[in-house]
Image 1 (cartoon, rainbow, N blue to C red):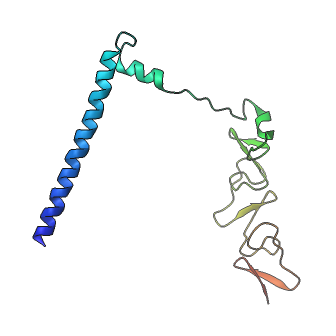
Image 2 (image 1 turned 120 degrees about the vertical axis):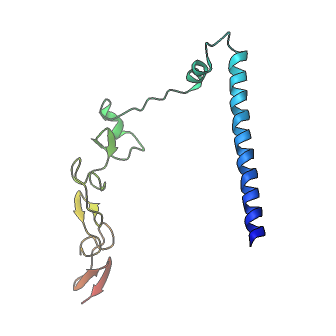
Image 3 (image 1 turned 30 degrees about the vertical axis):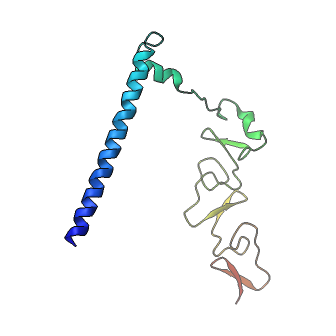
Length: 141
């Protein structure tokens, strides 16, 4: 048992040492690159800033028509996001109306699919005449 612990600790120490040395080598390469190209850029930080890509998110608050585009999650804009208020649990029926954890949004209303006869197990799954919705399954009484 002591031998296993000794081997485990030794392997762990070797892996830790290798990862630290690899990280320090990467940093040295970055510093060397920055000093070589110092005529073009004033510091490594400035070089890093020039390499980052600046992406701008197009929000529906500034451009409301973007929600009508093909592939959009929905036609309404709620909190700078395109949503479908008929099916979105966080914006059910109107912006900001959240459904409870055991409810889903069907046709803009929060319903419990475990016991709702009109939405049994999911939206628009109606149980037949004389059937009841029990835990999301239509059953006869």
